[in-house]
Length: 229
Image 1 (cartoon, one colour):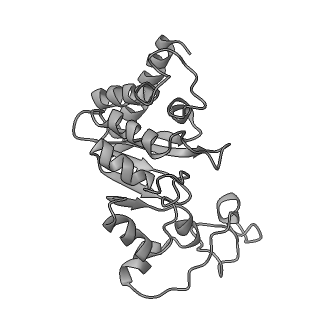
Image 2 (tube, one colour; image 1 turned 90 degrees about the vertical axis):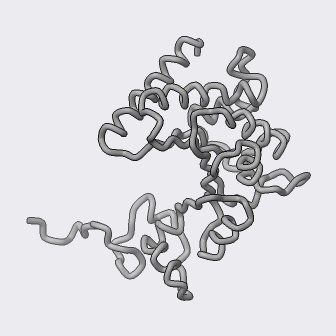
Image 3 (cartoon, helix red, strand yellow; image 1 turned 120 degrees about the vertical axis):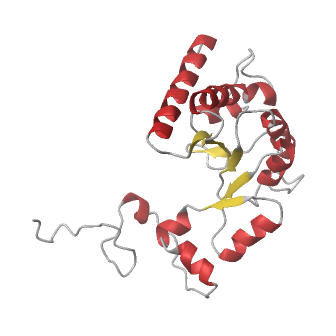
């Protein structure tokens, strides 16, 4: 893509964010993770550009920063703006940044002066940074280097897991995915402090929620055999 095309795409992000805010959203999160477009720029093994949008950690995040600037101009200073990051993608579940924590530190430093209010680290397990030479969790590195609050996701299944992420400096907030598919009442159960026999996550909850309500919450599911009005 040409630089002009990148600006046009960034304008599209800004227009979408503005519509979301006009519809009542308190802010937006830009998806720079999991194999999508911005991930392809931030990930050095995918981004082979030799212009100002590639070739170094600072250049690799330049497109994400451009999008953040245009969104901020569109939604104003009082709405929340978050950037989601990850090492892995939908076609690269074991992806790792070359240089590990050093690359993460450079990315965080490059985002320090960006328009984003916070970063969101997405992973299967935030404690596994896929870099044996330095086991520091990636969200810890990004938080320290960027100076921004970090939302941390991955490997948080119990209330104690969330507490550990928050108290260790790896998170200012935690995000959940799979535990909520298995237990939509997860936050209330954890808040109660009661021990609970958690059901394991099953991908069928995502692809086709079961009709056996003994193993999943109804949440508006309709048995096709039920009489319809």
